[in-house]
Image (cartoon, rainbow, N blue to C red):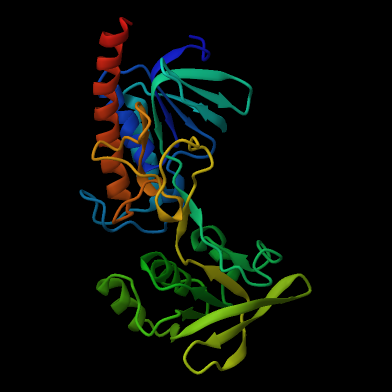
Length: 315
């Protein structure tokens, strides 16, 4: 079967939303292909523990990724490991161009490209990335065994990563720009009960410093007192939210503040046949389960769209 042929549906992104969409698309008998440039599971692979996905009291992000991927494969979902260059909307069909040079067409496209970490925008953040600055504790925590690290952020992700790092590092500082965390109460209590974690309230980083190629300190500012001090640390872990990975979203697609894609209750954009799901879309909550739910909704809506499109156009 040639990859340069017409599909009913192209799914871009293999995170929980994309894999869920693939599962429902296969069950709807759509000729579907999923394109993922990395490992199936997306951001789930960077999560140490998942405690809030229905049906699983506790499992790792990579385990959940594997289970979702195996489920999709068991239904015969076709997957391509490649990077998407562009999505070109059309009246009859939509065209997806891959980095390998291949072009695929489909009646419907589900964009599930997720997001990427928001940066602090301070000196040293980019310069020392991979040399003590990290956006993934489960990826890089191993290198800080027995050392001192600081986590920046106050949401669920920051707190979860601080708890994970406390299993490895000798000391973990958790800096938050406010005087209260945004994380769920159960996670907050775990932080407060952990002797290895010290809270730095009303605190923001202003610069990251290194010596001999590796991070050795961070400059912190108290937003209430304006006091500035340097704190000796071996690693800086930044978790202040994500931005939508909207590079591939066609220009004509409507966006909300922050670049998130505006969709209707069917997860469809203002361009017929193009859907956006998961962390890419404007929504109240961004969780694994909500991304998976979006994948279900978009796939069912795409199936209806494809059926009507074929009937209307005589395909």
